[in-house]
Length: 234
Ligand code: ZN
Image 1 (cartoon, rainbow, N blue to C red):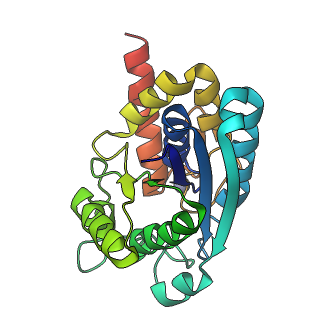
Image 2 (image 1 turned 90 degrees about the horizontal axis):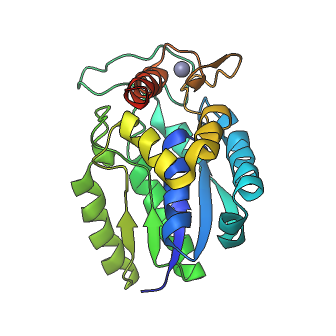
């Protein structure tokens, strides 16, 4: 197996920690993002800033960084009918899933990324999916992604590994992992440059980063940061 990875990189806190994880473990790392008509499209700008900051502050990691690409998946937003791609209130749907759920999103992301990795000769795909802070998204489950790895390898006659380093840790531990990998410089990038908020709000810099402070993504990030800080102070 070669030491080349492709990171599904959205510009959020989780995928930035995954990017650092990949840069720590692999010799060559490329990045891929997706434009699917998300309300928080501002993350597409943030991802460029995060990459720039990593290059500036971690030159050894910067030397390992290869091509970055953003794939247009506008059709996914068009067929999804959910609160992540349309201006509507975030709430639970009748089936018990939050209406921020974009059906099949992570399946599509991994499949498209695999097609790119196939062409680029990258053996490992890295994603920030997490079952612990489970927002109820079934496509974040480990079993879903393992099954997809099998199907993709069969369908492409390949031997990709899908790595999800955050699968069994929570947001607090994600901050801790970030600190372990890149110290306070990486924590600073996580706070100031990454984007998490579903509504795309970057008007105020809170202690835990930018965001509306109200949506489920902000809640998770805020609580994770508070626990991380209180543990650091103990
Ligand atoms: Zn928010």
